[in-house]
Image 1 (cartoon, rainbow, N blue to C red):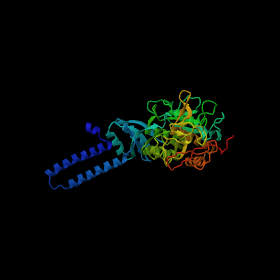
Image 2 (image 1 turned 30 degrees about the vertical axis):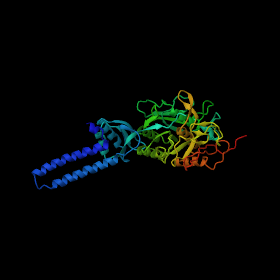
Image 3 (image 1 turned 90 degrees about the vertical axis):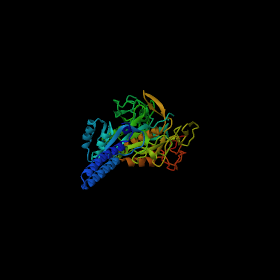
Image 4 (image 1 turned 90 degrees about the horizontal axis):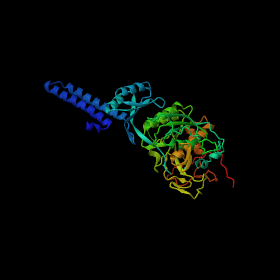
Amino acid sequence: MRFWKNVSPISSILMAMLLSYCILTSISQISLFHVEGQRFEIVTFQDKKDKIIDEAHNLAKKLRGVQGEKIPNDYIVIMKEDFLSSVHSLADKAKSEGATVEHIFDHVYPGFTVKVPNDEVLQTIMQNPNVDYVQPDVKVKAFAQSLPSGVNRIDGDLSSTKSGDGSGSVNADIAILDTGIDLNHPDLNVYKQVTFVPGTSNANDDDGHGTAVAGVAAAKDNSQGVVGVAPGARLWAIKVLDNNGMGSSSDIIKGIDYVTEHADEIDVVNLSFGAVGKNDALHNAIIRSVEAGVTYAAAAGNEGMDASSVFPASYPEVIAVSAIVDIDGKCGGISSIATTAGKDDTFASFSNYGPVVDLAAPGVLVKTTTNGDSYMSFSGTSAATAHVSGAVALYKSEHSGESPSEILNALKSLGSNQNSQCDGNGHGYFSGDPDDNAEPLLYTASSYSTPDN
């Protein structure tokens, strides 16, 4: 029993099949010893051996590899496109064999998540001809740092909503897939809430990360606390991360499935989390959701590395966001205050970078909302991404028919670039980018302006 316990699922499946073959082969040898001349038996058993090996190879192809910290015995099962009706029946069969089914996907693709009691149940699932592939579930984490004047740096006060004048409000919907949102925070317009984290009954934030993200994106313009890039936008609190900022890719996919169900209402989704590696199931879910018209902004990550290996930021369908240091809300690097992430108007030392990054935004010491009707300073590419999500909502409120790719192109063309001359407000670039990508710096003003002296 100890031996089998330490063998991988696909290895144990192969062993079981080959053991069956060996038994059959030994029987055939006994038969041939007693009954000579029946050579057709050899062909029959050779055929069986070939069939067993072919089946094992097919099962091996169905079990897709994934990097990251795997959740023991948890798998994401993706059905073939034309077999939506088979999802519930296969899920019920798995439950009858002792498995636990957590989520069923109906909108991004047909599938479900399952915790299997043993490899035999996993083998039964993969043998179903309607199953496209199965992949292990993995953990992801919120991108935050304990280290945030961002709206001023992107000239949100000069945007169409004039963030900070006490009256702006944006008619758009932002989904925050995160640790939840403080549902009673007076500075946040929480419109709907749902949780997909086991053991929780609502999307009230039990960590603080989601509330911080929500405030950067959409804190109300009510002359108190802080103001967001898209002030007063309707916030959808979708809890997919637990009270430690950790979550499973399957919970996140269920959140994306929910977003896709409401694609005619939700304009943009903020993804301030991720992990290193490859995750086909999550990628395919985002592809389908973007095809339904939803824009996604994803944090590049805080490891100071090339984001090409980080998901979901590396997916070409999302807007990947890096972070810069901004101290005074103005371009030019004129503040003498330095942070552990770098000097004013420089690329944040913690921020991931690389060719997959689409936009940069302020991400150090950004003041925002936190749990308990309070406020805090917030740093990381999570904060930078929230600026972009707010900008997407702001843009979408004025260009309702634009597609996700059109929105990305518009934000990139409006952003500051290496040739932008500092105007004394927020329109100007930054220094210290560690690569040759030179992503535009987010800018939301309706037009460029020169400050009064």
